[in-house]
Picture 1 (tube, one colour):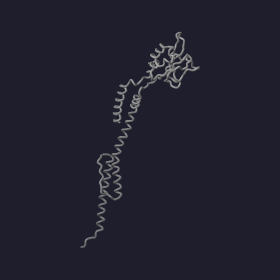
Picture 2: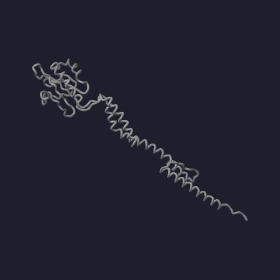
Picture 3: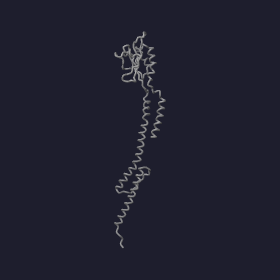
Picture 4: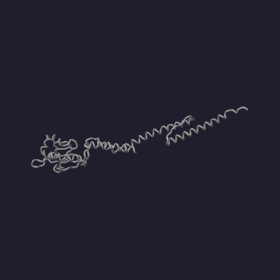
Length: 240
């Protein structure tokens, strides 16, 4: 347990230090929403010119390549050009009802579409630019996310690894004396008492080995004594 705590703290220090040094790769939930005023200001300045597809390249220099997709729509809500593939405007949901609104996606509450109007010189609605983005934390690299997951799971990982490591060591220490005891039992079974069992470790296995050796020694003494008695009985008495 102590080992896993120490390793977890060490891992967290390294992981948090990495996240601090690379905090520019972690974007807060409102990161892309904060970009909208700059984009909206550009759209308002360009106005109806954005309905010309030749303006696509300059518009995409203002809209971030990652995190925001868009559509330039005409007055009927039809797509003129853009990177957003889904068109949310329909006869039942006309463009005029969405202007200057942040509309939540039906399939994802964290996904929004903001409609910036395109006005003519007479301030008539002639189209819009739909900006689609997510309001959730994002990462420009997968490493920060993997590190966060690793920091959360590190205590459990270290506990499992240390448990396996300690179990392996204990298993090796126990397997040798157990193997010796099994071998000794087989030798006694075959009436072979000419051996000794040595395991000088102060634990339960050591006590068991010591008791087994004592039993073997007493059995050897007993059988040797019995063998001598039988030998004496077989030898003839001396002549007087």
